[in-house]
Length: 501
Image 1: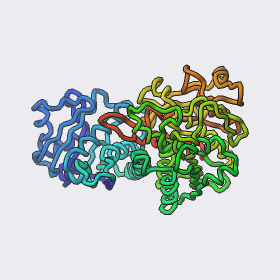
Image 2: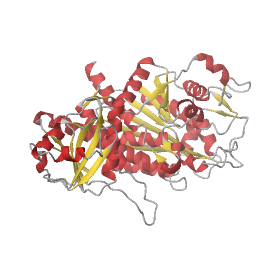
Image 3: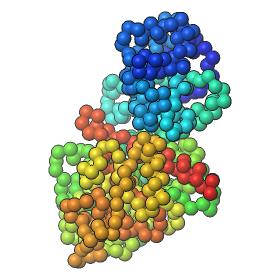
Image 4: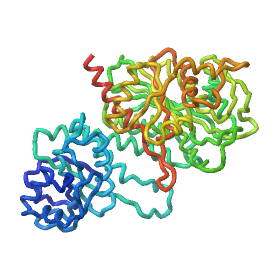
């Protein structure tokens, strides 16, 4: 899908496969719809008088061969009651436009929605979110089907048509950002949707090296021998039950000043999680290929940042392994020594994500990061607490937490903060080691975060538990690409704050 921005004085003369305009509740025309209605001698008013669209938010009406309009199709979308939309309403509108265009056969589309006002959102952000929605709506994972069917490509070309020439550069910047985020989300979803027999730790390592060949990203891969020499006993204990060797994937992007401390992203890369000796139930175990969505997010953000040429230094670290039952696998009661020197009693082998993450969170110290954010499908408890709408946020730094919360609201990729109070640490006590890897029945998402917090004392840190938001189940099964939009929004604001300081 190719995007463009152009000034259009007479929308009725736009030759396109589909022209898109907005209609408010009560069949009130948006300014762009009014202009199109005038030049088309009331064509839109006549259509609305038939009563098939009342302007309610999220509704839409597609009309073929509209009278006195050069476009092959006219798509009218409901804008709701208010002239200023909330962020959530605009995101719903963007999804509506994306879904409608992806399901029609128009080869091109022109958007006439310049006048839409969104609460606390710039025109650039609106353009970025629209592009993101269009790319998301046309995404399909068909690379492993012998004869892909029902592939919806959507329009090959989409133009943002505006009347104010001074807004062209602003919209173009938003379009470029949306394209970069969309490409990052696609990479994240592609990696996550691949099955465990293809997307192994070695496959992820190969993908990281391929990324470095196409973009200004430096990649290095640590194998098991190198990790053993370093002392990564926690990470390596997880991979013992698998025939696939573990990998520690390190990707670096330098878009900021040479001496500027980087932002580090650490993503859980469990390419398949059967639970180990503490075996998971068989139902829906196929979805445990998504246990590497944290790692896939790191890939997506690095790609998006490099595509957008963000002015920040990034380090992406993905500890990758499988967690399977085997004679060499971790057993409940085993004690391992982490890279930090802390010993860990493994009371449940299905709490393995924190074992590979803790060594990566210690390893990242060598990069002297300004901020570390880890991303992991860590606990079912977080899904129970927050459902599929928000990712769990934990942090040892209030400012960092506030910035991530704000980025979530702006991007629509929301998070909700949960505590990491010292009172919860008592649940992680072990009689035989420094720390246990689980904290009992209650507050599972919190105690998992507190476990990781034991390895993050030297830097500003946030933990995102994306167990509920990283993928969908059921008929819409598939990776979502979250939280790539959240982290890109955070990084964009982080750069602005650094320049202002």
